[in-house]
Image 1 (cartoon, one colour):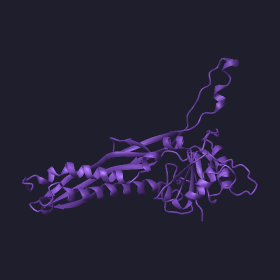
Image 2 (cartoon, rainbow, N blue to C red):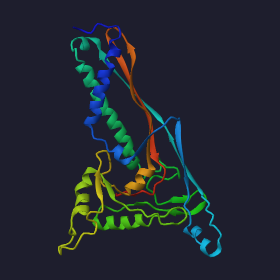
Image 3 (cartoon, rainbow, N blue to C red):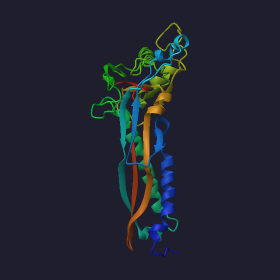
Image 4 (cartoon, rainbow, N blue to C red):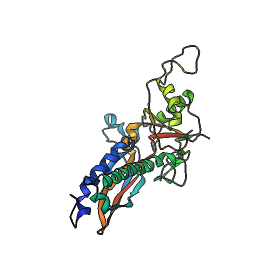
Length: 301
């Protein structure tokens, strides 16, 4: 029997949500593995950075009985302002009357789920696609990967997490050394242990050869490959430059790379007539990074 209800659009919502979820599951997401995803109840989120402590503050008590006093320099404040994302789609009444199980509406909702996943993946990958662009600054007014990161608002000197080297075993080694020497604003070695390479699909095979070959892939003498087993290779469909690559410490990454979900996707009936219903899909979120030290990027020409 055809659906006979003045509220038929509302009755379809459970089917639409179900097929939306199916669409979401059809597209693998890297975003939840890369970002620290949190909820939010505010218009924006603000995370204040604090400087490092000199290890010398711990000395002296045994000899003098005077307790070391630590003082935290205020760092940069990362602000995450949530943006709204909205689309609408229509379902004709006659399609529902001819299809009792809501397959037509469900197929459109499935496509919506696929599209929502793609949108969020593209936004998430944009952090890396724009990592070298001054048009996408972080809290310190520098892009994610830069050769001129200031130490903090009150100290002079620059720190570096950007290069221009192609992906090779030798350059992986040099980048790893550079990351392991990363300092906080007080000049302390942070103890970074880079363990992942993020690459576009075009560089995945090269990266796998570098990190999985037990012998040096560039040597005819069966020399060992020191990079073997040190890194996980993370290819991402949505990286737009086929030459750029990134080394990451994923522990620090999860502390610094943030995604705030202010409003998970909602689907509501915007309008209904005797012949069609218009549905509105709405979501609101923000994303970015508190600190840049978890990554070293190469902008390869």
